[in-house]
Length: 125
Image 1 (cartoon, helix red, strand yellow):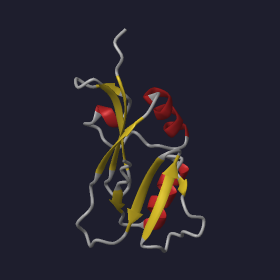
Image 2 (cartoon, rainbow, N blue to C red):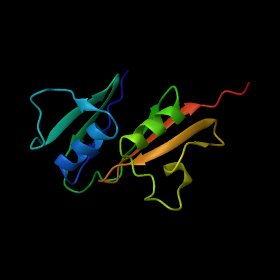
Image 3 (cartoon, rainbow, N blue to C red):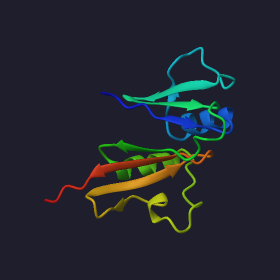
């Protein structure tokens, strides 16, 4: 099974720019464009769809993304331009945090309000 989240976007060109320049996704189909109603993006085996359809009912989706090294990935995204200053009361948007449920996580919220929760299991040695 493979889960492919569908994120509602207010502005497709802005969303594509965010995901490709900061989060390192690429267009799955070379002929896709920012004028399409649905655009598929990929990053390794991860895939997501962006859409401007569905009226205003899909804003604010959340997807969990499991990664091997959450700290390195966070630093990489910050180096690519991720602005981690926008959510004062959310430490998990500023740096990776060890959660009580056994995950080390950081969150990225895109310009349309969709959130990716990047995490890796905490291994107790």
